[in-house]
Amino acid sequence: MWITVDRDKFYSAIQQVQHAVNSRTPIPILTGILLTVDENQLILSGSNSDISIQTRIPRVEEKKGDEEEPKEWLVVHRPGKLVLPGRYAGEIIRRLDGDEITIECFPNHTMKIVSGKAEFVLNGMDPDEYPELPSFDWPQEGGFELPGHLLKKLIQQTVFAVAETQSRPILTGVCWEIIDGQLVLTATNSHRLARRTAAFGHALPVIEQAVIPGKSLHELLKLVDDEDTVRIAFTQNQMVVRTNQLLYTSRRLEGFYPDTSRIIPQTAKTHVRISKRMLHDAVDRAFLFAREIKNNVVKCSIQDETTLVISADMPSVGQVTETVPIYAADGELSHIAFNARYMLEALRAIDSEDVDLLITGPMSPFILRPEGDDSLIQLILPVRTN
Image (cartoon, rainbow, N blue to C red; front, side):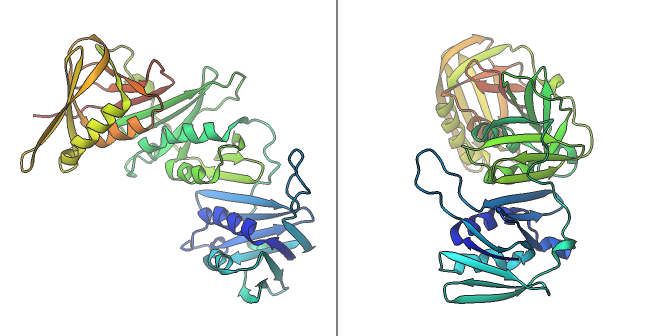
């Protein structure tokens, strides 16, 4: 293999792929980055036990509209493959000051990297030992497309609610399903739940409980651009995400996700509408005291149809009380206590200016949602207080 490649483009691709490279893996070949070159493109690949990432650099940038001649990213002198040491790849490329980089691999798997006046010689590994990964033209069927900004929003509004411990491994992932023709993402740690539903206006393939690790989805967020058109498909044990320049796969968690629909209240005894920003800021101020208390307890009291009171009490320090105006109210007066961190994270996941707070009882799950919109449900279990 022998190529000359644009330095900035190559460094950007290295940074993406390194999200899947683990220097501590017991499999030596996976500590490296696989470079595969043909006459038209360079594909960089990284893989670990959870995810694989492939990104490609075309020989010539795709021409858009009436732009001038497209930029040439890559010159292929000799096609082939090599495994670039992952530990040094990014650091070397970042320090090079030339506009282009020339990489040449020799039969003993050593390689020479030249840019400007700098020259590195590195020991590589046999690329034939690298595990086979899906190709960019797979899968062609059985998936669905959505805009990159929507995919990122779906994940951002749910992934924070996954379990942080391995006591129930299945809850460390987000469950993807197609229910009544709509895509539904659900995450829960048994004390809170985030559920996002999205309709696409066209038929979607059947998906039955594809549970994807939260850590894998956090990595995916870093890789997808808002402007991308994203294609998603699920195999028996993987999730496959593809854009024009990126191919991402994640393992699916084994096991059955609990039926969370049973814990979502269908009616509410109290329904109030309130400013999201005001509620968030009041809870955030109360959190100054609550974060020192077990379960970060903040209390919420609906005293009348116009006033909601947020309070926290830390005996060794003091207490805080703040009133928040209610825009609309219906039902009974209510009092609940909740984990302030859960409430803040739920509010940050909601885009609307106003939110609906639906309360069923002091010890029953309550719901936060965007104003008049049940496509996003943030459910929190109250905390028992003395």
